[in-house]
Image (cartoon, rainbow, N blue to C red):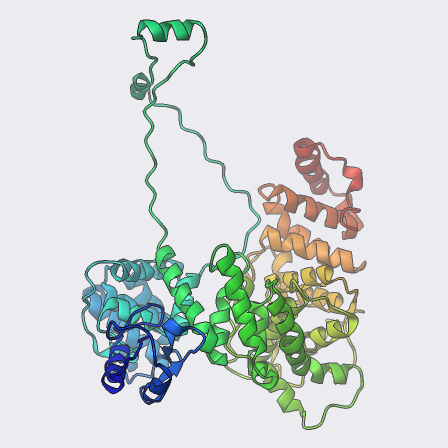
Length: 630
């Protein structure tokens, strides 16, 4: 950050003190004493004593702060009356000041016994106004408790962004600001936030899935009569202008009163660019855990961190850093890195996939692959170690592809967590842009997912003696995941409908044919959602048209015996089909004709849907239904 000259000790000490106070930042080219760069080598020792890290590749950034700061654990004092439930928190916060409500949010987030009161605090925060200090504390509370509330978070980010770029950088001090690196002013506080906080600010919690419904068209409002007089033709002309006009050399001029529409920039758009540039500067020297956290800004394909060549440079720098890591150290972050690099297309990304990520994926999934194929397990790879390889996956985003990964709070809830991790790992690797999948890699990726589904189905059918296993379910329990899946009441859902649709979609796109996994997922869908759809409750999922259409197309494309599955999908999608996007409606009708039972193919609702959505709207030949996409 600073260039040291002959007076090295004093300059180095002043630069180190300035960095510790946050006055010098690694992304700004500033000089400590105003002198030119030179004789830096003999001052690296003084920089090491000041916990600065050398960066010889960039002369103007010759010294940088070390690892990114992490938020420390704080001793938050919670009133005993709150723990004993003797105080109505809703009534207490109704007349409290804004900073008192922010303090209450911090206490609720740091005390596990009060996590159930978070909705009460969040609803009150949406009703009041708070300053920048309170906004940072609320941000920390939301991250600690794992809250994803778009309305509250947008309000928090708007407050932080407004004060970050304002002329007034002063802020109200708070004892809990000692959690962060520097709280002298708002810019220093935001610049010194942990990586997890910056990633949340960049992503803005925008990872919802498309519903597949058509957007309502906005009707054009008719012009107001009192404003028509503002549009008029010029009538006063000079002789030369009239001559040109009569000869057709000039066009008729019209004057209109046009008012530009004033729109407000979305909260966080300006702050996001500054924070993303800071993360770019951290890449060359970040540790592997910090690198995995930074990579989550790339885990969502619809979101771009940078624009133009800067996006490509960021991805290449990230891939180069992953490629320099040891494969054994990458294992706990396999899902985090594969989900982040799924859409990378540069040469460094290809090299990182081949040299680091694929070997890590094979090591994570090899225990189940060896057992499924009847091969001896590797040395020192015991059953418990194989399970921990999935449980130890860290720092991946909890809302990959818009689906929440459930926490493994108990042993009974550990199986849905492992199944979700296995499914997301399969989607990230088999659906990667630069990765081609062969039969052996496909078997490695699907082995833990198959084991989880078989274990869940086995326990579910054991709890219901009248339910018989279908032909596609495995009868040999030797391939099931060795864990206590819990009772039928404790199990809940193993995989959400969105994840099932994504897995089958990737099975189609990767080009490997395997009927075992689609049949297992078919049985899983019927067990989880069959009764909910037949009784028309529709409570276990949102049943969006996009997911149902993708699920129906993939299932009928991969296997033939999908009549019961397609029947359930048709019942769930029929009420929403009229408002669906045209391409999704065509996809669903094509899948229904290809795999539905005879009772649906001869039903009046199907004939009416084909006539309205296909013939009348597009004048399409219905004879091709059932053959599209084959």
